[in-house]
Image (cartoon, rainbow, N blue to C red; front, side, top):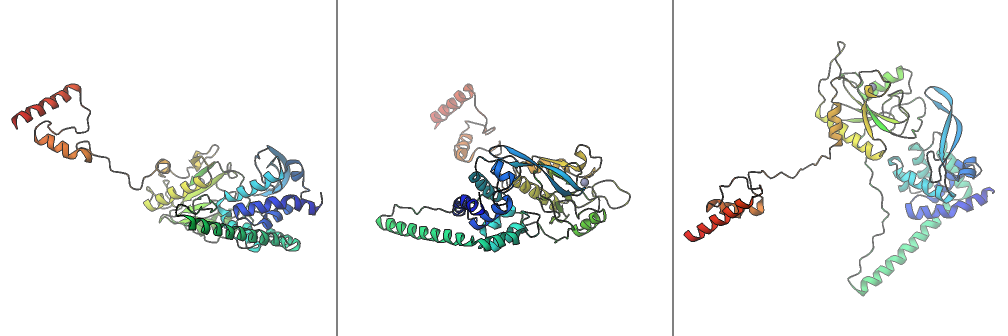
Length: 408
Ligand SMILES: [Zn+2]
C-alpha cells in the first residue's frame, strides 16, 4: 500500500470521528501517518495499530522490544501494544484514549490544527520535542486541513437543515421539543486548583503506562516550598522533584512532576504509582520541628486531590504510605502522619449536608399532631414515639380511647 492509499483507507473514519467527537480529522490522519510510518510499521501491519498505543487491545496485544531512556540510563524495554481487529478500531480507540484523559480535553476544543498539535505536545503525547512541528508539516504539505474545512461546512449545512425542520415543526404545533444534540462530554475531575511553579526539569518526562495506586509521603522537612523540594531532588542527581503533587500546610496543592509521568518517589513502583507528598516532618526528630498533627486545610486538600486522582485513574485502587510499600524501609510518611484518617475520609462518601436524623424521643413530623393529642388525652405517656407496638399495647390504646370517649 502506498502513502496515498493508506490515507484513503483511514480518511473516511477520521472524518466520522471529527463529526462525532470534535477531534480534527487532519490531526487523526497526521498522527496515524507519523506513528505508523504511513501504515508500513510492523505494528500497523500485524496488529492494525496505527497510533502506537500501548496496552491490551480488543484483539489482544503484540510485544515489541525497544530502547528507552529512564532514570537508570538506556535499556532494552519490552513494550506491549494494543492489537485491533481492524484499522477502523484503532482509529476509534485512539479518540477514546484522548477523550478519557483529562490532559487532552483541550485538544477537542482546538480551533485549528496548529493549536491542536501544540496542545497535544504540551499535554505530553510524545516525548519528541518536535512532535507538533512534524504533524503541522505533514498536514500542510498534504493539505489535510482542507478535510477539516469540508467536514465543518458539511456540519454547518446539516445544522441549518435541522434548524429549518425544527422551525417548521414548531410552527405545526407546540408539542414538538427541539432535540438536544450536543455531544456528551464525560465529566472529568478538574485539577484546576493545582498550582504550577513552572519547575525546570533537565530531561523530558517518560509517560507512565499504568497507575495502580497512590503512595503518600512527607518530605521530612518541617517547612519547605515545592521549589525547595525540587532543588533538593536535583541535588540528589534526579530529574527534579520526584513527587507528582506537593500539598502545603495551608492547603495549597502544587504540581511536581506531571501526573502522567513516571515519578521518582518509591523505587519499586515509580512506573505504576502516583506520589503525593504532604509538607511537614511527621516523625520524631532532634534535627528540626516535628509535626504531630496535620492542619485541617492540608488534610482537606489531600482528600480532595486523592479523590480526584482516583476518579482520573479508576485503576488506582489503593493508597499506601511510602514505608508500607513492599521492599521499602523508611519511616516515611512518619509516625504521626494521620494515614488511616486520611484513607477513611477519602473512602467516606462525605455528604456536605447530611439530613438530620430524627431524634428517637421526638415523633416524625407527620405524626406530631396526633402524638401530642394522644399524649394530652392520656392514651400514651409520650415516650418512645418511634417504637413498634405489641398487640396488647395496641389493644390498651384502643381501650383507653374508648374510655376517654365515654367520659367526653
Ligand atoms: Zn517517602
